[in-house]
Image (cartoon, rainbow, N blue to C red):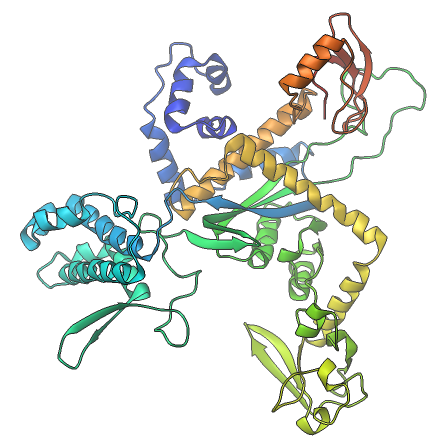
Length: 566
């Protein structure tokens, strides 16, 4: 519970431990006495380590959602929405030279702590301390050119090879090679450098270069980016690039139940009536490396909701999560209808908006032929396996395409005819039906519901500070996000049960001064009028300037002159 309160107020571990000892509201919430001595802040770190080590990151959120389901505040078969946001790692970004040097330094630090006698006997410590005693950074020196950077990186790599080789010697303790920092150093050397022997018998260490002329570099989802957090990866989304993780947040977005109040104007008794708006609660969070695409997480997110018995009937996502195969899998495995725009045709003709894209071809699965817009049939139909999925490659002969008068609208291939890659029959029909349905106004109006998840992400970033990871490692970062979700749910439940504002609007000092000097009521709010999204209506303004409001259930409360419920 201390960790949940820590996330709710975006506090550090020291501040949270101090709040347990000094703040009455925390002591009341935790059930502690006024004379409770509290605990040292390091206990929180030990607690997080034990929870992550035993795989209990989801336990707190599971318990809360089970209680909310028993109270009828969350349920299966409703409507939910999911979106992702970037999370910046708790380590600094390193370029290749710094990564090589810091990897050697991190391994030396770990060996000096784990086996100092062996390290002192095996290496000349003053020489190594001169090079790796302080963090490796280019901030303390002028920016070197590429040749100097390559030379410096080669020196770091040579030291790294020597250190790894020493750990694998027969005279070295066997457990040294199992130290995580040593394994990270070894992996970094394999991924970033090559070691060859020249004709003269001299060892040559060089950096790996991308492209066909180089030795090749590993893909982004495998390449280690920091020796202090082996889980972080580089990610890109539109024009944004970051080092860290990606957070997926799922939340409810059900319609309010039908009103059961009598039509007369009799004031309702204290409490809530049937048409009062239910709170939108967080039902799941998932943390991945930044390089993991959103589409790879659609099925895991649905599986997590299904495990909690909270699988929605309709799940709203953006186009990054969807494909025809994913839509079919969600319906088949979990009974979930995905409401997501399918990605458009990515062929050159479709992107340019000029020429014959896939929709211009007539596909006949019974005869296994495709007819082009000029009425010519295909000459090849080959089922293949691409990226782990079944697809069909269709080819048109060169004798058909070469004399075609519309060749420039179809293909630019010189030696071959047009080639198409299509989906199996069931997925092709599903894709066609979904894309057609996306054009209707009803579908587009319904899809507007998805935009509300941006508010949940905004609240998560503002309240819990989850944009920047507090801890290192995927496990502890996910633990942070889970407890942040619990904190957000508690904030939303507090606003729901007490009829308070979930998002209190901020009024600038200039607006306050203008209101005070003019003596007029400030009437501009996000809804453009005196009615909020919870159907709270303004009754009147008191002599002291405060406003009096009433809720759908008949409850009344007051607010400051410059604050409106939203």
